[in-house]
Image (tube, rainbow, N blue to C red; front, side, top):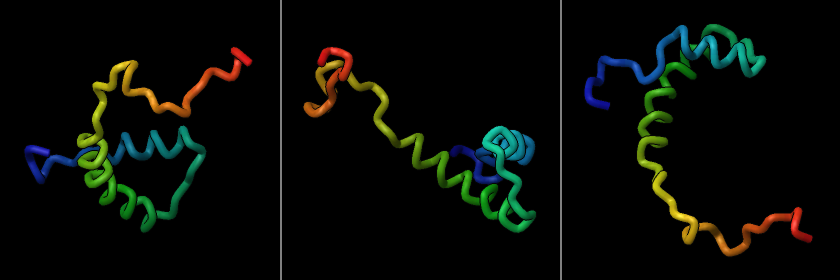
Length: 66
């Protein structure tokens, strides 16, 4: 995150995501989730996303072939 004052997720976006998931947290829980959103964003930004086909785990298989 470039600007520490810039929230990773806006209040409106979090409320929309929670409503879509069917969740209605108490106000204190909502504030905790909003505070945690910054750390979740930073963690997901670190995930490697440029996997190739060869990087697929050996135990992955297509059950439809059996």
